[in-house]
Length: 363
Ligand SMILES: [Zn+2]
Image 1: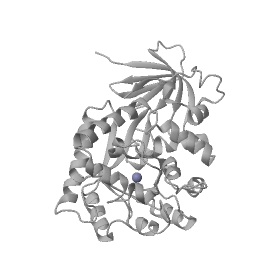
Image 2: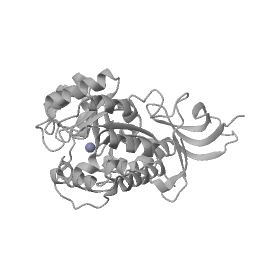
Image 3: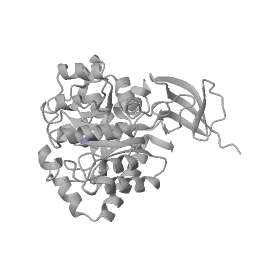
């Protein structure tokens, strides 16, 4: 029995996104055909976009939606930051329920893939993995860390990489360097990813973060040209979280230096960071990137889709609309009150698209 779906309309097609007026076929979860015939018998019509890749989240703190706006260390620095104190106090069942609600929110707002730095050791990672088993077609990359990151238990790193997609550490100022090196080696041996925060508050941890040769560094809010050159030379991509940086007060006036990163050839993806600081709605991140940083619309689009997939090693099958890739798609109403009268629908999608423009999600 065939479960082929045919969707017609305007398609944001390819790794270098361009607009095609035509149709797209999906069978068994794979994009089987894209063409320019507008006379096809389609079951769905609208603007067809790949689902977002949210390249950096902490959804463990979904339990806390409206914290006081404190400085960065008071909010999130382990072990005494507000977030960590609250996570220690809350019952596991409540945390898992809140995580499940955030996963649903991701799907509803068009995200198909996310990468989460998960606290709480193997137990914390397993909780997220459990929540993911009942979420609808969402691909989650879980980057775990030891229960006490500065002092991993015997065999804990090995156990972590068994249940996780990789290891995600808070930063070189929080954890002894030799522990981080051991974490990198453990991830490498298991064929898993290693990611770390760096350059969020100042430049003090950037060089040692690069020295670890991670698969990606999160933030780089304060990166200078010399750091960006090192990143390009070492082929280390960056995940920026601009809304988060503004909330925690490290992003003013226009940091991170995203334009400079792109000019110098750094691969840049985007993430929404802690749920307690920002919603997981990637439309908001796109609009912020576009308007605060003045970036070109297609660059912003790639940062929120393909570049994230690339950083996570998923770009062969996800992150853009191409034949043979997985069909993680959103179909938007390009005649909605918000999107109607657009002259360049890709620019409108980036600058003003909203979750309520979505008609259907295919995962
Ligand atoms: Zn983070």
